[in-house]
Length: 609
Image 1 (cartoon, rainbow, N blue to C red):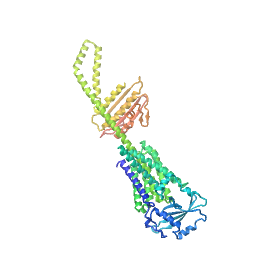
Image 2: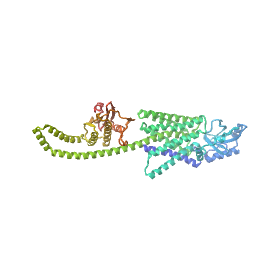
Image 3: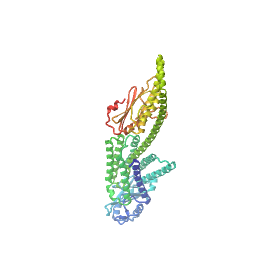
Image 4: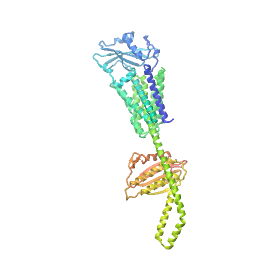
């Protein structure tokens, strides 16, 4: 399966999860956990109706409809001086908070009575005999003189939008909003693509990365406003976890690693598909089993990431900067899980899975974006190489025609040449004879130079580039030969040799007048390997940027040195590549393995030139 298909499958699973969350919002369900219609508290109070039940339960409690010994025990624990009572009603593991019948915020019930911003909570645990769970009725009292309650519900506009979507769960609404943003962005992008009649997958992926990271960080920053101290650490961990893929993504974009991570690809798919399955089961009210298995599944995902990390570095494709990002993601994920388990927040494990899956998805997106860009660049380069190859062959064909005409002319005049030479020698006019022989020799030399190599493509490249070099006042010497039929693709041969010769010619052109300008070219085949060597005089070392040389030509898109192209071709054919700089020369060497080649001998490689 291609990287593009895997990425689309991962995205589809996450988007499907988002649709389930949005469906929960629309249906007014209280949280995708289990069917409340089948559970009755031992007080005889029937619980049903999803989110509306929270409001009804609050009204019943405040009106005194819920009367039993448990409530009586609870009321005895209340302080005598109370400014305002705030009723919290919990179903399962979820608590909804109300002030004057207005929902403040939904959060997990505290383990014991505690005071948060001047609001003290008192918990009453009511056993549920159906499955061993406990319902909790929480009565929160505003302490005397405290005005924090009004501030407690003041939120910025972004959070107000989220609360408008679903008042019972801020985090779920946040992720639902995130998926809505993604859906809108995909819709807009699709419309633009349809208008322009061009679909750019890389652009869409980059847009999604920005949405995933940016929206996630903003939502978590907004959530920090609710908490201080240890509670705020949890949200900070989420922000760090979301931001961690950014440096890794930059390194991926620079093609410095993670290009071969198949296991990482599999983990991204597993995480996303599991998340979708988990939400489906919850939506169908069959989440009891999954609830108990979540810690083990979460640990399995972390173990998968660790295995990914180890395999990457055992294979030698990992990089230190990627290692730092992966380790940081693992650590923050563990902290995330720990905060859930210690706080008893098992019902929000789906968000922990999302938080863990997002960095992996972002890294995978970076890989696909990079692969797409590399493929586009490779196709562009191959097209340019094929075009160049065609131009060289066409020029060589024209030169061959001229050579044939020149050969016919020379052989037609051969008798006349011998006659003139004989007469000049007989008359003793030796100076004129020397000049005449020099002219005839020049004509024969042109015929010889037209055929430098048996391989037609290599011959075409050599004749064109040697002619170009000599026109620039560069002395060129060629040794070697190659058969016409090779297993190496013609476009690769063309790209390799043209880049090597262009580098040498451009370097010699830069040499000031009065200094020697010379290029030595060697091409030969031995033991099934083709050896290339180009040595040029270079009093000044070329300027390098990373692994490429900086060209001085006007059209830098067509005349880059392209050392990376030479490296790619040598890797493709299991060969070798070297650059040797000295005080007065610059040597580029390459070896390509022909099909059914023998053993690679370093001596043959080093002896070339």
